[in-house]
Length: 119
Image (cartoon, rainbow, N blue to C red; front, side, top):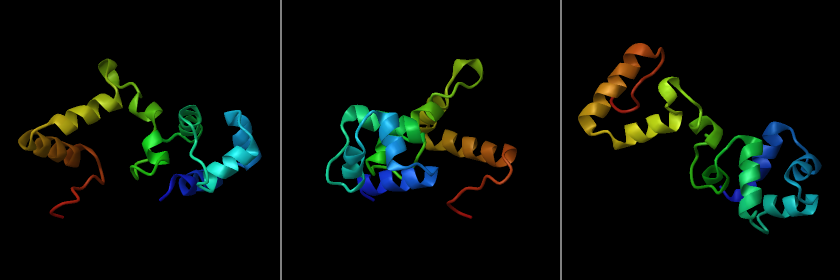
């Protein structure tokens, strides 16, 4: 999906008008319209503000990932000063054996958690 399509879908999902979003971003409605039509791409600063407004990552806005998780979620503080982003980094760095144990633990403690592979 192109950046413009994503921006349009997010705006509609949130029930915002172009005028409201443009006002929140400090840009003209016509500039927002050109981003939503993929005529122009939003500059870095606008991209960051769009991500904050919609609670998604810049990578999601750019169509690089289907994951909408925004930076505020990744920076959410967990017990002992860790963040959710820290946990993701650990999972990505884990070897296969430790990852299997971690997934098994999730299956045991989280109702509804199931492995996608093998079930």
